[in-house]
Image 1 (cartoon, rainbow, N blue to C red):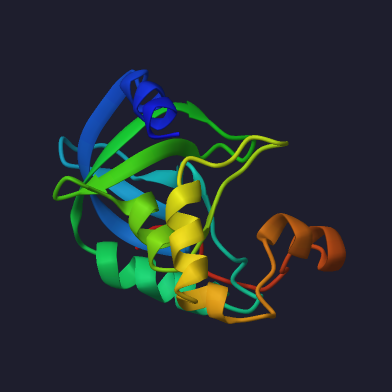
Image 2 (cartoon, one colour):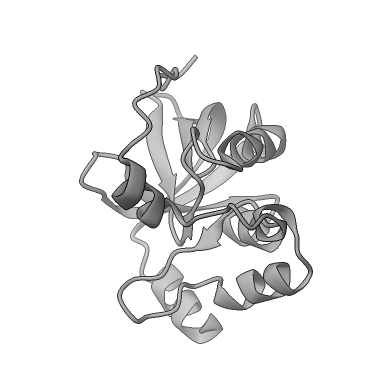
Length: 161
């Protein structure tokens, strides 16, 4: 798994430093490039955080906000998702932010079909230690939450400040 993640990360074509200006939820931030230009909406690659209206959504957003708001990060991106967000790995002071979010129990490792997510080992450790959302029997992966309840439809600010 780690080798796969490293190979994927080495394939990133565009890396740049920026400052986090806004945290929308537990896996989406706005990053202003240090070189100037418009802020970019960035979705953290490899994780899936709870929706803001579901259990652990506010805690996940708060954790990411506390870790990144106003901080310089390196953005490694190569594509956009269907919502126009950059899909990127973020690092802060050399530390992988997605790995930290999963390891602390604020997000799931994003899995697709039958493929384990890139942070599966960290997720298993957090589950074993009952950290964060993994201590809560109500915690439901966002894809299952949306399938069962729909999207949040809550008026939450999602623009950079």
